[in-house]
Amino acid sequence: MSAPIEVWWIPLDADGAVLERKSKLLDVSEKERAARFVHEHHARRFVCARAGLREILAARTGVLPGDLRFENGPHGKPRLAGPCLFFNLSHSGDLAAAAISESSEVGIDVEEVRESPDVESIAERFFLPGEVTWMRQPGCGVESRRRFFALWTAKEAVMKATGLGFHLSLSGIPLVGSEEGLVHIDRTAAGPEVAPLSLVRLPVPRAGWEGHLAMTRDGTGEVVFRTSAAKPT
Ligand SMILES: CC(C)(COP(=O)(O)OP(=O)(O)OC[C@H]1O[C@@H](n2cnc3c(N)ncnc32)[C@H](O)[C@@H]1OP(=O)(O)O)[C@@H](O)C(=O)NCCC(=O)NCCS
Image (cartoon, rainbow, N blue to C red; front, side, top):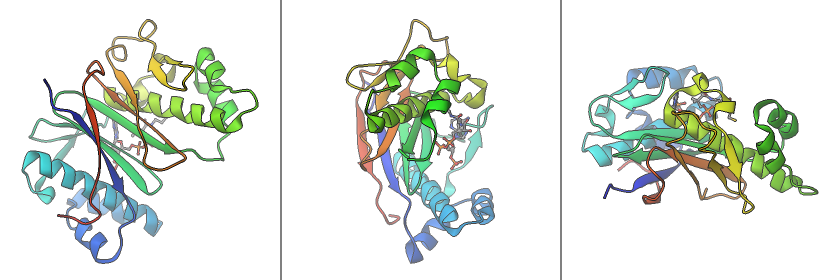
């Protein structure tokens, strides 16, 4: 039986000496990218996410966090150069999530359920008619908004699992919603890149967030959830 897929929550609010220690774990290109952020809090979140990911991957591979090397897949999906371990990272606000797997491609997406987006017009433009119908909850704006972000994060997680990014159209990720408010891939309508994937809704450790994990195995395998330490080990 394959090892469980791990989902790690990474807090992105370190500062002071902890942040300084974390920034030392990054490679040159990551440090350059961190330096390009205009706002200090965006740079801090980026450093915390990348350092947190390095610490988690280091514990699994036995390679020191600062010695891990990354490369990009054909459409920009980061992967490890060397050890065969699948991972994917997502951040929103001051929370990141990383999925790690030995045996399955993974894609993960978390989003803060914000007030601002015009969910109706975005949904009508980008979602399939059946998805829009499922999203609309009469008299219940809060649940409609949550369902919008459920569909959004599920599609994004699928995009990220395939590594195809925008090369996969949103209509190419057909979803069906259940009465309980969960979404699944419509395998009868999905193409060959999407049909083998399974979705798991993430138990995001904060109210008002939505997130999904997409993986290439059949979804019967175990997924375990962990929280990353605030300080580097
Ligand atoms: C990277 C991408 C796949 C997701 O971006 P995002 O949701 O803004 O950001 P997330 O925080 O969830 O993910 C970013 C991480 O994904 C990873 N990533 C980058 N390219 C990727 C790809 N092609 N496939 C999978 N993962 C990718 C990186 O680790 C990145 O982390 P970094 O910013 O530290 O480099 C983006 O390029 C994209 O294609 N977004 C689609 C947006 C969209 O229209 N969504 C509609 C959903 S309904």
